[in-house]
Every structure is written in C-alpha cells, then in structure tokens.
Length: 131
Image (cartoon, rainbow, N blue to C red; front, side, top):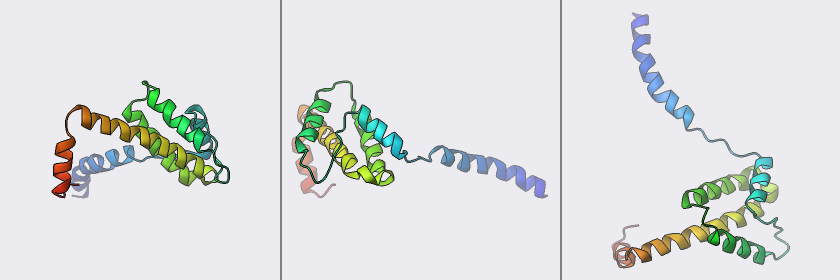
C-alpha cells in the first residue's frame, strides 16, 4: 500500500519540485557585480563627489548602442538591483547604473507608444484608473 502511494506521489513531486528548483535565481557575487559593471561601462561612483556627468554619458552611450535590446536592459537593471544588496560597498554605483538603464528603457517605451499612436489610449485608460 505504501509503495502504491509512493508511485502516485512521485509524479506530483516531480511536477512541482523540479520546476521550482529551476526558477531559483542566485544573486551575483560582489566580484561579478564589479566585473559586469566595468564591462558595461558603469562609472565608479562616489556619493561625495558629483559625477552625474559620467552617468549622463552612460545614459547617452547606452541609448546610442543599438546592440543593447530592451530585454538586455531589463536583465542589467535586475542584476544591478541585486548588486545594490550583495555588494553594498558600491551600492551607489549600481543604483546610478540601474537608473541610467531605466531612463533608456523608459524613453524606448515612450517612443514605442508614440510610434504606434497609443498615447491617447494610454491617457484614456489612465483616466479610467487602469494602472
């Protein structure tokens, strides 16, 4: 009887447990955060020095780079958000980098809305409370 229950539960276990293990995301290490930020051109930031111009330059460079898709921007934003926690010593750098990528992403979304004549629909639905 116990063997029969085990055979019935095994498929259920595999159905629910295996997909959940595949969804576990691991936060990047501080070393990975630094390495990726360096490769992506995210300036080293110091909240005590005003280096906003470096982040504006990053925003401009990313906006001009046609090789960086919206999905890549999302992935970088997600990683930099995790880096703010796991590599808190440089959290200001990752926050500013994430902000630069978000600005580019939102400009692209706004451009999409405009190109597809969805601005009116956006405002209409927003006025109806659809958010």
